[in-house]
Image: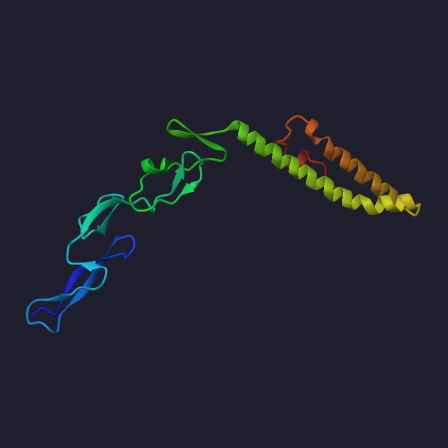
Length: 192
């Protein structure tokens, strides 16, 4: 007489099929009574297809969509989406196409939003410009104090002039052709 038999386990919250487990024969009964482990059933789950999973709910197996292992992106926000069992790209208004930077969904593909891209480039260039000016002003302050107090050496006066010229050059960058997408080589070098 058989002492164990295979049964089918499922996840306690999601109901998704987890695999085979063993049920033991009841030691109290002479008849064939099996002790089924918690979250398991004798009902065999159905065969799954591509991107499907068997789910046990209300004492029966159903097939549900399973896109959890496939990267998806929202067509509205271009952000990653993490689907749950039963959700599909259509139900989430999502796509498997990875968006480029500054993407907008148009029809059936991503397109680059030129205005957003230019705005981001402008903001990045302006931030870089402001950071460099702030750093230059910190370098200039002690030199300006020395000049104002009349204790600056000739080398300090020359250094102050270099830092002032650097600040002027940085502040004039937006007037150059190609702003805000200037190559690093176009940005002025800090005084040494």
